[in-house]
Image (cartoon, rainbow, N blue to C red; front, side, top):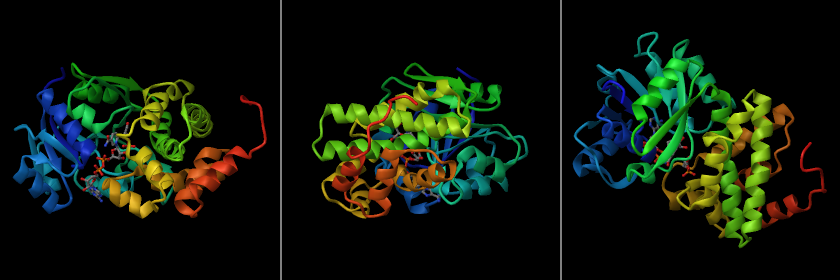
Length: 334
Ligand SMILES: NC(=O)c1ccc[n+]([C@@H]2O[C@H](COP(=O)([O-])OP(=O)(O)OC[C@H]3O[C@@H](n4cnc5c(N)ncnc54)[C@H](O)[C@@H]3O)[C@@H](O)[C@H]2O)c1
Ligand SMILES: O=P(O)(O)OC[C@H](O)CO
């Protein structure tokens, strides 16, 4: 275990809270910052995060606060776990407060939809030169909270910083690997959410195991195409952040993205499905960002494209399926 740390953990959603529990298990002190005073007050009052991660008592080592200054006071480390669309504004708030050289890690999965940028590019723009790292991989918050064995990867351009964060999180039931490939890890974490919506739709429409396996495999091919074009390393796509997280989210109903697909197949609108799920569904906005990015890069991503059309152009799941199936035969590997 690394030397005990004081971690400012920004974002008291399900993943932020679960990572906080893991850090506390390792003996670290966590200040859990939320931007909504009422949410923070409810966590304090209930002694658990009843809305986002019910059934897991907040340990003494985790202090919720709605003051970012308080969260950062005396912090040795900073971990951001807000949704992707809040990432830039949180990074901006950090830039005003953190001394130069203070490293920032995040466990957010997604792209900045306004710019189409990967989050480490946003972080670099807002926070300047300093150690940066991203935590990603197949990891449902509920399972991490319950202490079920989980493995993630921590990617950073600075090996020492990746090692530091991996050590903070690493424990008996939580393995953290390190990687130098922020690009590959980030694009995988973002794009798999879109593909999980696709498998949710397929399963919701009553298609079988063959369809699901085909979507995962051809989805991985899409992920590799866009990831390689952006400069990701080939091995990343077969790793925890790539294939690992793709399989997890495409096959298990704990995934909110998969549940979004299931709800759409039942005839729900995107807004109705979001309300039903009641939490962030990153794949919705990521589908738009991936659509724009693929267009700009000239990359073919037929499954992701149909998910985009269902979510943002009002195409029905049945029509989107038809469009996919009507494509001309082609070589599997180009
Ligand atoms: N839940 C999981 O199992 C899981 C696992 C791995 C990665 N992630 C990723 O972690 C990120 C957060 O997801 P989550 O599951 O915790 O979401 P969530 O819906 O459970 O919670 C989101 C949290 O972000 C806060 N937030 C929203 N807008 C904000 C803003 N502008 N400024 C500050 N805070 C804001 C909300 O108040 C809430 O506490 C996402 O990118 C998600 O893909 C989630
Ligand atoms: O519930 P989802 O679909 O946002 O997935 C959560 C995590 O990203 C799984 O690794």
